[in-house]
Image 1 (cartoon, one colour):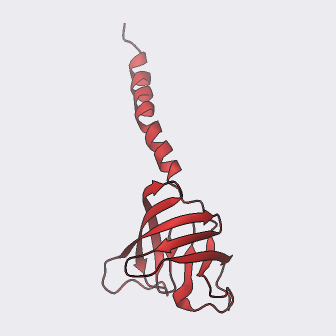
Image 2 (cartoon, one colour; image 1 turned 90 degrees about the horizontal axis):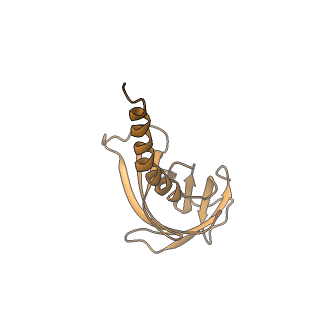
Image 3 (cartoon, rainbow, N blue to C red; image 1 turned 30 degrees about the vertical axis):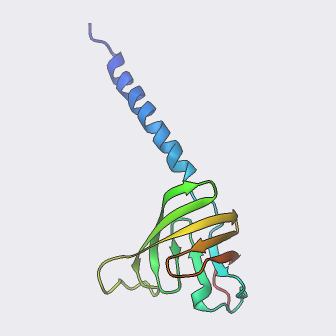
Length: 136
């Protein structure tokens, strides 16, 4: 008589191995409100392009980038090390170099609508949520 338990044992073993990985993945999600963020002290309305970032729940993009995907590389409390890769320019045309633009930065979540961002060779700045679209 064959044991019918073997397939279930394999599934149980796989679940025990993968469940902790799923918990880590869930824990590393960035919980900020999707929309347009503007760097302080710029006003929401009429903010210069250099002070605008968008977060769509999957990636951060600026006015000159699109089709971006952000990955949390490391999380320590409210601090996240993030890598963002963008394959298109802001007008949705493909990047002429043929390779994605990749940038890394440190983000500290202050609330669901505010964070600080530190990039190499740039001073740290605080961004606040302004809208779900760019305001003119």
